[in-house]
Length: 376
Image 1 (cartoon, rainbow, N blue to C red):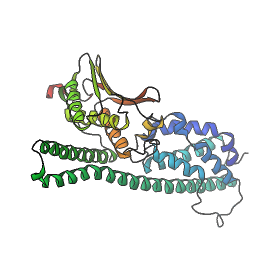
Image 2 (image 1 turned 135 degrees about the horizontal axis):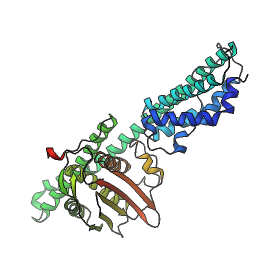
Image 3 (image 1 turned 90 degrees about the vertical axis):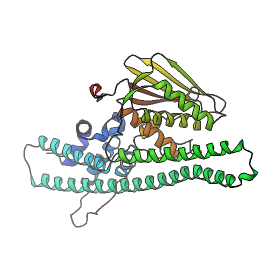
């Protein structure tokens, strides 16, 4: 009768398939992941455990808390994908269950050797889980510290602009009357930027606690919002041309304040990472029961894994090539835009290439799924 290690080696594909199905059914972290991204290093982890079972060891000399490279690599990727520590642990619980359940079905009788194999398997699983969760916790702490450092840097810039402008205003006797409104607007724009960052951070905290961004939908015209935001952006960034194109009906039932936040985040991202020689382009397209909104800019292409990584805004993975720009604004602003779209029953996607530039596209149903029209 084959030992448990042999069973794992011989049935690794069947175990992985069973685990994949169980993970998709029970683990919210698996939602939206491709088969390749979900399976990840599961086969490597199983092979490490099987190899451990093949090493003769007594309970006394077996090392405790031994780390496995596959488990640690798995932890790094899961941290970047936005998994919680509970979701990572659930993956290991599911893997343990799949192996033992399939193995027990293959046994015609249970011997003392089988019980020993089962005990050693559980020990090996615990060591893999310990190594994974330890690395996962370290990755979260590192990402959080880096995120807060970048956020502090992003807040320091508008704060510095406010302080320097206020210093100039104290010498009002040397200023021309026409200069004062310009300086006051600069303070207002910098304070507004700080407010946007703080609002995004509060929304991030809310979503990380497991709740969605609240919305208060009401009838509105998306074209009016786009025009208002473009006018404001032209005042702050007069050197960046911004164009607006609208086709068809742009009216719907949305939360105006949240939609302004969404569009502002997308336009700010496009302005900061686009080329000053080419315009930022906003397009509204009527799609019957939905409205399509796209924001396009030319500039460094966004890597394919960037959009997947938006699920974890605390991570800076996927921003390679954009380090010269405020990384927090990239991740946090787009993450919040994505969450606002989702809260309206919509979606956000990105298309990017070196030749065609980057386009972030939002599809919003004209009425959110849970909107009660009778209460409006």
